[in-house]
Amino acid sequence: MAEVQRVAVLGLGRSGDAVVRWALGRPGASPSDVAVFVEYDTPRLAQSASLLHAEGVRVDLGAASVPDEGWDLIVASPGISPSRPLMQSAAKLGVPVISELELAYRLSVAPFVAVTGTNGKTTTTALITHLLREDGRSAVAVGNIGVPAIAVAPAVEANGVIVAECSSFQLALTLDFHPRIAVLLNITPDHIDWHGSMEAYAADKTRVFANLRPGDVAVIDVDDPGAAGWAEPVARRGVRVVRVGLSGGDARVEGGLLVVDAGNGAVPLVRVDELLIRGVHNVSNALAASSAALAMGASPDSVRAGLATFEPIEHRLDPVATVGGVEYVNDSKATNPDAVMKALTAFGSTPLIILLGGRNKGNDFTPLAEACASRCRLAVLYGESRPELEAAFASVGAPYVGTGTMLEALSLAAAAALPGEVVLLSPACASFDEFSDYEDRGHRFVDGVMRIAGETR
Image (cartoon, rainbow, N blue to C red; front, side, top):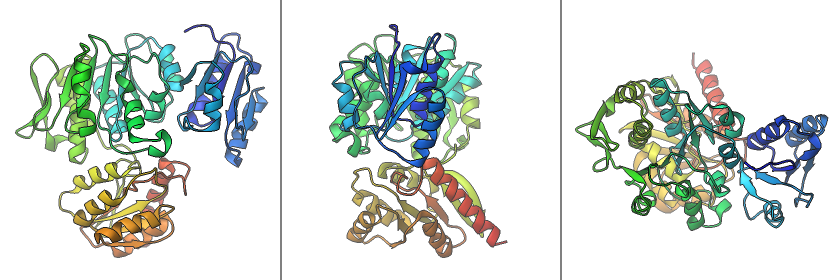
């Protein structure tokens, strides 16, 4: 990467803070060459800013624009929409504006496996990492999964593998990012408020393929209509495409067995019922992850062993406890309707009480209400989006009750649940009306379930 001295960072979340740490850690770096510009001014941000001020770093809270002060590079946090004044002012300076993911790629020597899609990214990223480690590879999971790529990727040696969960926000500001393997799981409506349109959202997602060339591999779920259309255009560029299709792809299910043909003949793996992760969507995720791991050179035996031992990860159809014969499941990561509709497939015919609510991201809730009408005994609707959810559920005649907060919704669900049923937190919305992020929401749900368990002893 070309020599960079003065760096402007937009935003001060996990990604922004990690970029500041990188900028300060460069040989000969001066705190005066690093500045942070943040749109908002909250107590939490003020506390973070005070720590950086103590290190000599300038932090402008409540900033509406980026001043023209000779920046060599501007790195934007993923939460800042291109339509925001801060981003628009940065774009006018004639300076490269990139994502933290792009920066990490430019500073890394190890190959990347990139995973994107509206839903399933975290599970698939974690599973690929697990399969590669089972094969003895030095693999690290980074990106939207919670560990900023810039924090660890530059230290991974050339014989390691960086498995990156890539959000549309991060991909939107990539230029040179070139993974060896790119995985596209699905494209369904989400973050329309950020991107401005479904077309723009899809375009940013598929930037994951922008720099692939012959010798690289694209893993694409062709069961998903939004993803399937990209298989042929990518293949025409000479990139090997592994099509994931439960009943008819290169990676598929035959007689209850996961089978992958990654270019060297069909490889039988494990039975569907050997997977510890629930739901039809997770069978597709397992096929995509296996395809990526095999394409990176993992042995079939290692992939089989890894598939059989990979457990559900926190906040993603994560079993919490069974209290009074009722199972409570934390799916706080389900922040859009499509993720919830996939989660509904994970419980067979077990009666469900679902908790839905939070902040809408520009989605239509009617298809979700229709799915819940046929699958859930009751929906408990809460939070900022409650009026929109109630309107959708009323329009299709789906059973629901409404309340104020997520914990109030949990109390109502617990009171209504019968032995043998499942209470599922799968909100279909962002968490920011009540919580700092989906993890905070999930932890609060778990705490609430534990209180219910204590009260029923």
